[in-house]
Image 1 (cartoon, rainbow, N blue to C red):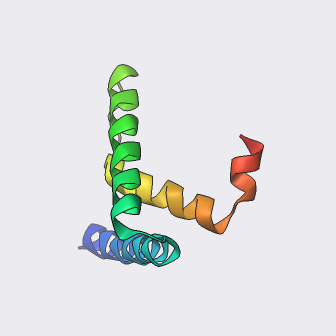
Image 2 (cartoon, rainbow, N blue to C red; image 1 turned 90 degrees about the horizontal axis):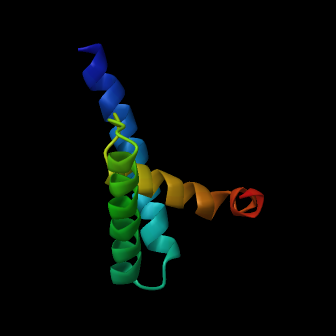
Length: 78
């Protein structure tokens, strides 16, 4: 039961982050395609490294992109 409540909290955070991405984007289709492309790229990177990620690539892409939106200094450090 504890795992489920933790997932629900994470799910609500993911939904909130996705809404932020969509509201900040000028075009909903383009942001959706960008998230999908990043998730696809991450999935292949994980496959090449033989890593099994706990988090699905789409969720990870949403989190990363919303972090970049909220904290632009992250991009400058890379």
